[in-house]
Amino acid sequence: MYFPVYRGRRMRRTEQLRSLVRETALSVNDLILPLFVRFGENVRQPISSMPGHFQLSMDCMVEEARKAHQLGINGVLLFGIPENKDPLGSEAYSHEGVIQQAVRQLKDTLPELVVITDVCLCEYTSHGHCGVISGQDVDNDATLELLCRMAVSHAEAGADIVAPSDMMDGRIGAIRASLDENGFPSVAIMSYAAKFASAFYGPFREAADSAPQFGDRKTYQMDPANSREALREVWLDVEEGADIVMVKPALPYLDVIREVRDSFDLPLAAYSVSGEFAMVKAAAEKGWIDGERIMMEILLAIKRAGADIIITYNAVDAARLLMQK
Ligand code: PBG
Image (cartoon, rainbow, N blue to C red):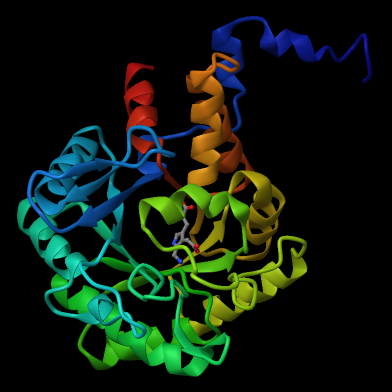
């Protein structure tokens, strides 16, 4: 059956033949758009390392979400920039917090758009860590209670899915129990199950003003060297009640995405993070690469690796291109 009987080029001869045997298809239904929301009116504060992205006041955020929705994007993932920060991140779980207000406005205007909220304290704490500080480290179990309050307050505001990104142990089970006890059994959890301590989050920390003021996140986020541990983290979150599991970042962790896909049958999300976006934008601006083609190739690769859902800052641009096809 080898050459010359088998000729791989036979099925690559025309676009029609190629599309007949194409194994992976990217769809606008796969995409989720992250948005950064802040207080104020008519504010579009550019994020310098993420061209085309802004810290948006709620009115502008709703407009961006509307545009995305019109292009066929099913969901947005909201990150909040609070008015004030304190050691316990209290705006994160306040009824009048930025996310709680934003979700209410979004649900009033676009009720069918899937609203996902980031559940993590780092944007809200004065020290920039993802939980309660005790000594020089984050106290896992003391943080759980705050994360639960945050998730419940997002559910009260109308979030469809809460997405804990903090990497504390046991938070999926704790949040599931709190949601259920507070009357939100239908609110889903998208767990950042395998989230690595990555330098690829750099631009995001400018966007969300969430860089840790001392140390780093290596005592809670995963070591980039570990993929067996990633499976263990995913397994725990599945056991604790996650509805969707996530691998983050995406492009440098395609092997992890594939392993998770092969080992679990839950919907799998991949988060193509700020640094992945910024690298491509910067190289394209220099004229070194074809930014659009590379963007689509990366999204396809993430899908091929096994992701069902891709969270990407390119969601709107990719949706436009998919529509033209
Ligand atoms: C909050 C959070 C981060 C990201 C998503 N949620 C930053 C971090 O963990 O430092 C990163 C997203 C991105 O880089 O696009 N914990």
